[in-house]
Length: 158
Image (cartoon, rainbow, N blue to C red):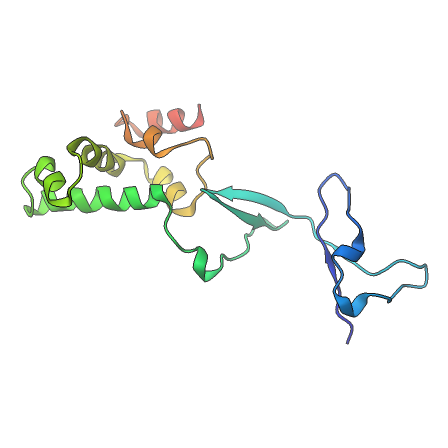
């Protein structure tokens, strides 16, 4: 059974030499018209936080490798914010200042991370799915966070 090589082509049709993408087993194999077999796969490279993911034509994404499951800094900050808020709500800590002291963090930093707990559900989902626009930073989300979800969405889209 012959292996088929895959040539990843750009959407504008420029293709590098097929020989660079063909497995060794196909070198020297030609069709009757003198061309080597290849299969063009239209893909898009999408940014997911600091990582890049392959988006297939049907909109699905290639599953990440197991070692790509490390949380992004924004995901870690969101988790910290929820944990620190839960500490205050449960009575484990009386104030955010006390949380900051226990964690060895600056009180202002703890307060900004707790601000992330007020984000709209779709923004939280975008953080977890790593689909936020690449220009949105942790500072944008955590500092001066509007309480109204529509204002938060406008702020991200602007």
